Amino acid sequence: MSSAASPLVEARDLVKHFPLRGSGGLAVRSVDGVTLEIGRAEVLGLVGESGCGKSTLARLIINQIRPDRGEVIMDGRDLLAMKPGELRRFRRTVQLIFQDPVAALDPRMRLIDSLMAPLAAHDAGTREECLEMIHAMLGEVGIDAGIVERYPGQCSGGQLQRIVIARALLLRPQFVVCDEPTSSLDASIRAQILNLLNDLRRRFDLSLLMISHDLRALRHICDRVAVMYLGRIVEMAPVEQIFHAPRHPYTKALNAASLLDEIGLDAAGRLVQGEPPSPVRPPPGCHFHPRCPLADEKCRHHVPALEKIAENHEVSCHHWRRSDS
Ligand SMILES: Nc1ncnc2c1ncn2[C@@H]1O[C@H](COP(=O)(O)OP(=O)(O)O)[C@@H](O)[C@H]1O
Ligand SMILES: [Mg+2]
Image 1 (cartoon, rainbow, N blue to C red):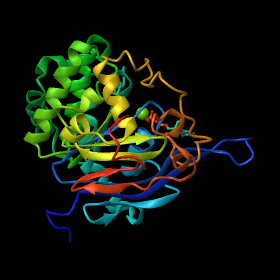
Image 2: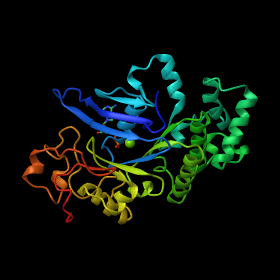
Image 3: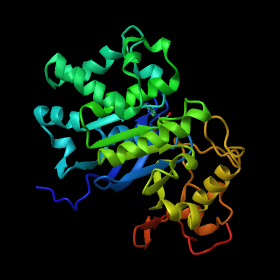
Image 4: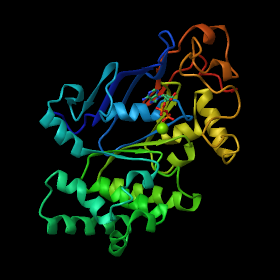
């Protein structure tokens, strides 16, 4: 059995390539050997430009898609070896919150029915008991009970995202993946939703995987941050280190872009500087070398290992000791 000290989630060497039809064997190398852990009640941020594989990694971790290689250990159990009954219980302990609350809710259903559905599916109690749970949870997410009689089209994006969060938490998950949970919201609402998630993670001792293409969205909620580039983790460290002592030139570039108040990032969350990376034909050696100010021969030919450079700090760069990038 797992001990309290062991991580809740362990991903080991996960690989997922999507074959490109009619390409003669080419594939999108969406996730290319990712190993990471998420502790109990820990919030791990996952940041990287659009298309780098964040959502695919999340879907592998919650068993929505199967990896080509690697394993996921959840609470000490091998996810890929779970039997149907065990998987069903697992599904209850893991929830996913997407970017777009409008897409997450059925437009033809009253919100109350959307909230009721997962409780009914998991036999969570009588209708009265479920209603009570829902009302308590609405209080937690700051939504007036009256609102749930409405249809999604009658609510704001911020209200809908609170409903989606309430629905995700109703089954009392241990682990929640938030995939760009504020990207579709107005800037003024974003901070409110992030603050709410921050409150709820403490209130419910949640482990979170917080995905964003914008480092700033991760700053106040994460304990650690993993930086992803073309299917690989290039740096992983406590959040303060990522902001104040980043070692990978890519992390530094993301930092600079976020300081520029998104001037450096286009609407899709790509760094404007340098060529957008291709996950079909990633550059040899260090994937980042064509855009890196420190790149030399070694970087063009040799993949840097993800190296532990301090307690809790890993980086994949031949030149991490240099500070001139
Ligand atoms: N089901 C799929 N079939 C083919 N390619 C996919 C599929 N899902 C994702 N991809 C590709 O994998 C890459 C990573 O996508 P994704 O994980 O969505 O990145 P992110 O969430 O970081 O934007 C992209 O090039 C995307 O087009
Ligand atoms: Mg995504």
